[in-house]
Image 1 (cartoon, rainbow, N blue to C red):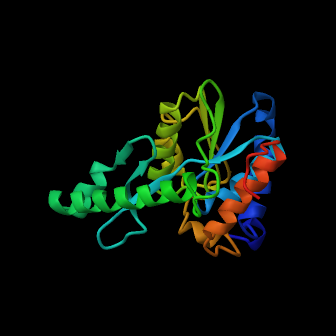
Image 2 (image 1 turned 30 degrees about the vertical axis):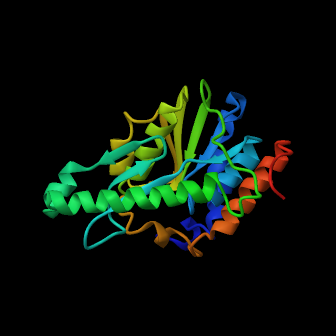
Length: 231
């Protein structure tokens, strides 16, 4: 892979992705980033399209010996996705699987508290933006197994989104094909045959801190004229 195909960082990836999403501007979409790494990418997309920015809160269910490898995911709205083929292939016992799900449930609840009801309590809550009847663009920094994106898409469908578009800078072709029936369209900048790892496609893939997520959401709310956004 040539260096010219790599992204400088998530903001660079978002700007390049936004160029492919320009035709959706007329649909007046809602852009929903998957925290944390998907939010800087989503912020660039929302800025380019003049669209509101929100999060769709998801938590991966990681494999027992490799938590970074997703065997499923949970999303807000009591949405769950489980890759039963991966569970069988890895030999995950039912009791072990239940513990992994419970852990993911706790972590999802913590993330919901963090992003929907931020501390200190003096700050206003961040209720989900309405998506009923609208086009929702789900944005992440990359698509590997695709379980978190699948859970995010189902969450937005449950909230009434008329169309769900998945947009990522880089994606594994197999996962794109698997999500074809889950979303209305998948848009990606790069679709390498050998993904290796999402971070390999970024010069800077440092973790996105919560304070950056909050700042990007505040900035987008202010741009859209939401005077209730915390400063």
